[in-house]
Amino acid sequence: MTTHRIALIPGDGIGNEVIPAARRVLETVGAQHGITLTYDSFDWSCERYVKEGAMMPSDGLDTLRAYDAILLGAVGYPGVADHVSLWGLLIPIRRGFQQYVNLRPIRVFEGVPSPLRSAKAGEVDFAIVRENVEGEYSEIGGRLNRGLPEEMAVQEAVFTRKGVDRVVDYAFDLARRRRGVLTSATKSNGIVHTMPFWDERVAERAARHPEVRWDQEHIDALAAKFVLAPERFDVVVASNLFGDILSDLAAALAGGIGIAPAANLNPEREFPSMFEPVHGSAPDIAGLGVANPLGAIWSAAMMLDHLGHGEAAGRITAAIAAVLATTSVRTPDLGGTATTDEFTDALTALL
Ligand code: NAI
Ligand code: MG
Image (tube, rainbow, N blue to C red; front, side):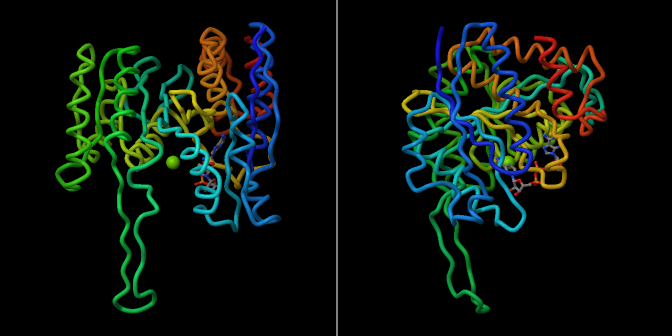
């Protein structure tokens, strides 16, 4: 019997609907595989910010440090600025715990129509590795002459050799374990300091991974190729901003944002890693009980895999594929009429 301590942060809106669904799936699979997960739930959210003035307590990171992993729903609440939730919770956790890899798998499942012309199930199956702690999302910069005609803003991007090398190494290693192909997102024609540096680091690290074929694409051309030929990708490595944009695009072309999972990984395991669906708190459907729990459930499967239970994780992703391929049970975002609970029932029945 293995026991893991999990910190649950459902957050706001549909986070409170999809995290319980993911927990049900984890409990079903855990019971079958002799994995015990214990949970503590934290109300850290924009709702807490409204009441108490902070997304989380000041010692929040110290509290989380004791857990083996964090499963997060989504944060965001009408009236609370988006930078508050990002810089008050998500970014402190990602940076404080050196979760420098943001890993996002993308698959077209049988039974989920892709808006793409020709994507068939099985044809599109790749992963985006996004640098998650530096790059374009930095606090360095400032504003001058506020309110005057001379007003200006400067925002610096930060790329370090250590920061680029470790995420690129992770991506090469992931590509080796998959189909052996890596694509690096760049824009060294327009961004003439940081992006040529990124390219140099990728080329140098590539020499250490001779079993992986690699190429690089400018981010604009890469976005077009995601739409026109998504089947050619295996692993795509990108800076923080480029990876953020590419992964929403990829989630959409695989049939919807409700399915897409993400892992914020600290590969050295010095700190807990965090798993969360790609979608936000969806205030337009929050409270209706119809949120698609697949993004949260697939994220929970990535968590099990990270905790060393690859087989149990594989059974969850197989059940996701099976419920979509062999039943017509779906939440409304995928054209069905099922509630979150009904859909989760159908999925757990296949386990
Ligand atoms: P969103 O992802 O919350 O919603 C976009 C659209 O997709 C909405 O129409 C929503 O109903 C739908 N949708 C999203 N997830 C779904 C699901 N699981 N099942 C069915 N439909 C789903 O993005 P939006 O509207 O831009 O942001 C809403 C709030 O969420 C904002 O406050 C934003 O800051 C926050 N947000 C938080 C994220 C996080 O916690 N990591 C990520 C993205 C947004
Ligand atoms: Mg995003």
